[in-house]
Length: 439
Image 1: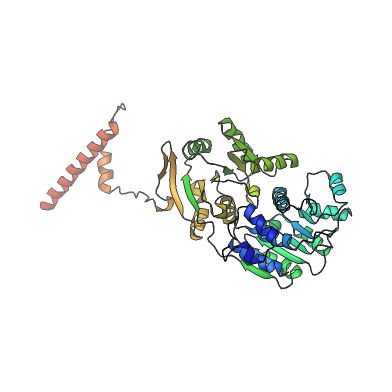
Image 2: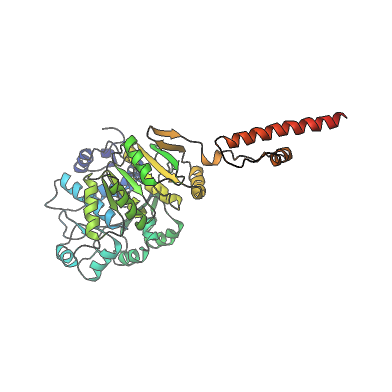
């Protein structure tokens, strides 16, 4: 074992074996810093970029402390979206399976779109872990289907999105129903200042762990292509023919645009799926499973899908539209180059995107200004470094132009002939001016 191995983080042998079966070579920085603190029963605020391994930073130590003989809820994990809940539930089930604990450990997924009565029936035998969205977990508590008072730890994942989606009220009601000294673990790529009051209320002397790193992984190449009134579908087709992405997520700014992109890309013959909040619960669940099974080469998505969900094998991000905020760009491109792998983000832009591009460049993102042709990517001058042509027209030019004879009929080469006339008249005018001076 290396000095930076999972065994040195005081995880038990079973979980060290799980990390090996998951092909985790060594802990990420956030895992190395957070796991010992959780094992010491500290409340945590963990802040690190997307794709840095936050999910297993809390799952592994929680599993390390789980009590197999208890018949009660031991851990509550809250997330802002169904897709992320389904993903983490799948991660939990995988750890249980790799630990060979299927007969002793249980987890229940509580999200909207699933049958409520069936959910209540499943909760009659309390699971060790409850994972879900705040609203649905609260519904089950109010229906007396489950109690979380026995829980030893409460996880809030993607805290900044919880704030954005207005879930702090539900989280407040959940924590009121938990034991007073519960270990609270908060994770997010960014921690907005608006969350400070919430933290003071529920986290007793938390350990704030922030992993300082580049805005986006250094292994991401950021290419930016000026749209110039071209059809994005044709550009994506050209990219497809030249780059051959393993899996590419194509981002749009809203559901309507995403739906149209999906139809157009499908019509263009690309193997494409779609993921956004407008899909029914059944459609979203099926799509998440399909994505995990690598069924699609292209996935059209909105920003909701960029938060937390881990789609395996994403080699490329294509921003058909740049988002309105810097953080959205960061979360989007964070879907690729995960766990140290390489990735490429390709963004189409117009002049109206200039302020966002400038801000991203100030944050340290190095864009390669490019275009895509049948031959592949070619370099372009950055939009803000192009020299604007200055009007060098002089009074002499204007005077000469006034004396040029305009043709009655436009024939090939007429512009060149008129320009030659103008130059000849200019020379004549200069000569006349010089004669007057000599006199």
